Length: 221
Image 1 (cartoon, one colour):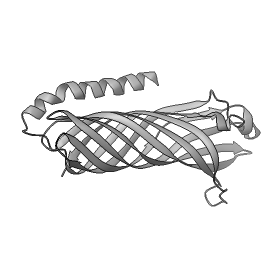
Image 2 (cartoon, rainbow, N blue to C red):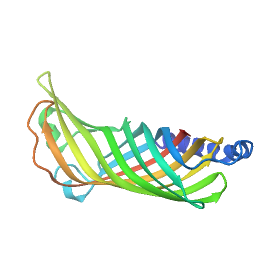
Image 3 (cartoon, rainbow, N blue to C red):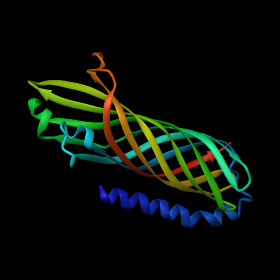
Image 4 (tube, one colour):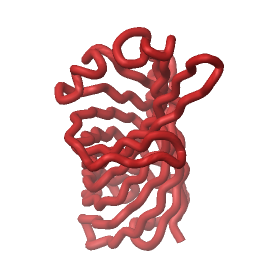
């Protein structure tokens, strides 16, 4: 998985190095109005201390993150503020060979869809370059699957938490842009659903960390 991380980081660095010349040929970059973007990156989720009794703290999963985002920014001169939302999924998964899942012979936890809604604020460090920080609400799903006597069992954890991050956005034309971003999410509350049509528990406390490094390309309208 480290190879995936390095590949994504290299791709993001190449975008950041190559795009200034393109931006210079396209006139003043636009940092205001609605935008839409495609996202890809590295995703790692790890259990925190509150659920150590269920899963060992060393258990984690990583994979490829992919998704789409939308937003609306307002250019205040040297400062840009905006709202944004994102829907993503991930290939991250792991198999547990001890603990609760042993009763089924094996078990797998896989990252599911992730919804994020938040805001960002940034400063122009060049006419076509924006450095920004972001934060907001995130709701994610973890899928727990197991098999026993040729029967498949599936359960879902629905997690509520918060996200913070920072990144750099570089214009590649007047309305197109590319960006590289790091974000950290912490999920503090969860619900557990027994099967696709089964009962759902009350919300309970968890402590789950998520680290993501992403690259994106987008367009303003």
